[in-house]
Image (cartoon, rainbow, N blue to C red):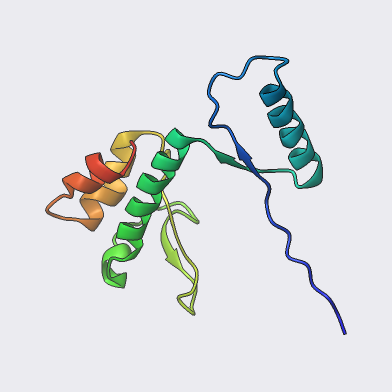
Length: 129
């Protein structure tokens, strides 16, 4: 009989925004970060502003991926692995935007293409751009 172990990514709480170097709180978080990076190479950070940002981003992504397939296919690119793509089974979907750090590119590829009448709440309300 085989046994499988599911590894969980360590979660580190950064809620204390003003830890003083050398304080017990500082030393605890510092050692947690070191152990997580040594053992897993990553960690999940808990921090109130990040949690709010994550909720906004995932809410906006849910709105995009809930659109009909034909609508999502409107997000296209001449470059490989850009725009909308979907596995034959439909289980895996992705959407990549060139230079997504530029707000106009998000507007062109997503907001304008996917919502022909526009979507102000996506552009300004849910999406943190």
